[in-house]
Length: 340
Image (tube, rainbow, N blue to C red):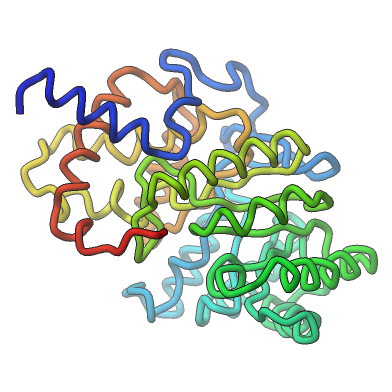
């Protein structure tokens, strides 16, 4: 590809992603941050919430049904290692198979020191309280630090009215001190999340807003990316905490780099996940990066990136753009359906 053609195409690719116009190249955001005892930068989680290390543990990486190859005992050790290394935000869901049971067993003794989040998957309000009570038992706790309407499978099947009814049950649970913060997540279908966020009252939202326009089984359309930007802007305006998920593009920017683009240079391939983390950290509107981490080496890499110089550089942008242009043309990504 001619240099001029590459940058034209790369510019389209980078401009099509959810936050591409936000990070300022050559500057870290914020420039000076408070850190945890383990050296991980802290950011405020909600107006009344705690300051938390910016790297969180995504529980969707735990279940066997989604490819975790490790034994129960090794997954327990992985969660406990995450705690020792300084991770304090843990995210799970009833939809994540054995994830909640693993977290309950692994983290019970340090429960008071962590920020524990789960979700509700039912689309009708009358089942919401029962689902929360079930999660409390599985997580071995008497309260939750955060609870969300789950983007998939719940929000994508809900009407706006159904979402508000479920949200209102969660608000009651917040009033009863069963949960501390109420939120919503969205892998895509941001046009459904936006009016719920705009209604106000939510403490946080979790959005698939990493560099690469992918959420598991689909590619984001330009339309959905515009809605994603609108969700982030509205949440920031209302002082609603934003959690970034799919930071690694559902594996596209991490473990699958060489599988997706085998010819991509080895040295640059190793830098792709670091650049992906810095890309999200460069947006001060994002308080938390919730990342699925199968292995401790992934955890170590992400923590090391967050503890290092988080300046989002021109080289980061070049690597992400060059790789992403090629990934978008690869067979694994072209096979994914594009959301509407």
